[in-house]
Picture (cartoon, rainbow, N blue to C red):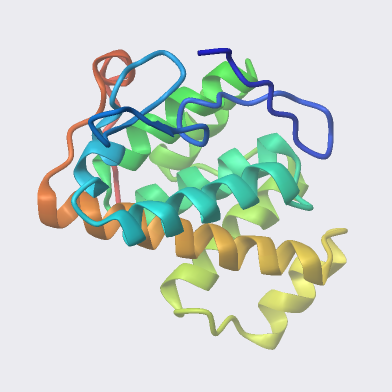
Amino acid sequence: MTPATNKTRDGVGFSPCITELVATPAGHAVNETDALPAMNATMAGAPALAAVYQNCYSALRKDSTLTVLEQGVVLFVLAAASGCNYDVVTYGEAGNAVSSTFRKITAAIRAGKPLTDARLRVLVSFTRAMFIHRGRPSDYEVKTFLNAGYREENIQDIILAIATNTLSAYTSHVFHAQADASAREVNWVAVT
């Protein structure tokens, strides 16, 4: 298979291992490296679920108005908030591949410490508010988010990330998905 090159709107590449799946003759989804990631394997029994998850994740990564770093922060915050160890590990690993500062960001998030970057701090706070209040942030939280330089389109991308996280986290919780071997080396555990 020829590896795909995926770019987000800000020109940064991201790993296609989650988004570029093909069907083998046996009908199993595999990625470009011929591995079967745990979440994709877990979702394989419900092709509609797998397709919706892949479409949501791919759309977020390819068409988001958030930068790649911001996407990673949002996904990591949601993974930690939902208590999904699988997502904490896999999104953490993906973020580390994109940015050398991502590990510091996730360490601060996991420790409950404020981020040094004020804009990212607002992103973390707003994402948590969206998750905790089930899509009903206060007017103050929305205003604070927008005053930090974010736009309404960014809120919609956070909603898409919540949908993606919900599909993955619920599947992981019910079917006890384990992080892939390479991701387990990160050794992170979700905190809530």
